Length: 447
Image (cartoon, rainbow, N blue to C red; front, side, top):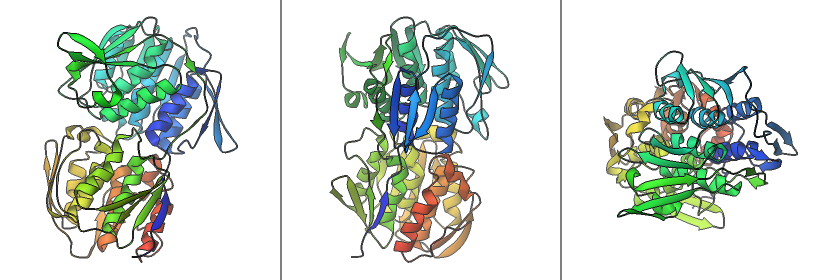
């Protein structure tokens, strides 16, 4: 067996956003280590600075002096450009609304086509006046907020868990206790809510999660809440100050997924370092998916190695891990038999339509794949005919990174916009060159 290619996991994007926001809302100074340096995080950083936080690099860490709260309202309009970051848009809209003032939330690319009505409806019930500049329920929009009232508020989770995460992060700044009641048929991507709850608790503002049993409500853990229907859940947050602390952001399971998959698909094992085996990140399920499909996996301390494996198709509900659907779709193309991906209808609302996008592009490489309303069906035969294909990323970082996996099976990949990976993983191509080299491919990516 060849020596494993060793790749350090990039910093968690989800936890970097949450750590920065919690530190910026804290009284005092926090030192944050291993925060992801990417376009999305730059947008969140810019928004927090506009609110009054000081965020500066110091000796490889981020020095964060929190916003001086409570802050009196000012008549000036603060313009927040969230770029193409849906996370920044949803989280910062709610956080800004908790601080009295006027805020314009706008973005770039597909951001003005990504819905926010479920969040803005909840903020309106909290006393925030909202004006949509173009389409109702979508950015660009202007928030005129006296701060949040607190009290009972409902939020629909079917499109995105970020609506709830935004409300949770803002709730400690409300005037009174906030009781949040989730609504909808299911809770999309609950593990991301768990990350928010964990981050808040680290910075001194725990939220209580309760489940309905009969006519009574009882406390439950974040993990136990994952499988519950929204109507059987509620969250309670009391007004409290965030407390500054030092923190190191753990490795990112979402961005590690491409390298985990590369270990199973290529001719050389791949070892990823810096991942937490018991992480609350939902995308750690990538290992479980690979294992179910027949991949050989070994752990040693905080390093996990995936070995070249003969894979089998599987039925996979990906409602809790939508970001890795494009990765799993590529893996399924080289598995024997049928793979059905379900539970991911809200993928149509991401940076691109992440159901139709993989279907269109993988078909160009000869993959039998068809779209379904909540996912896709892939019929693999373990191999594809070698060819060279021009593939569209749709400007979506996750499309670019997942499609690169085709190279490991003899497909020449030419991406229209390889630089779009800088949205979440600017160092991807440097890390990917290690995989290519280990698999006997030339040490450069195709453009």
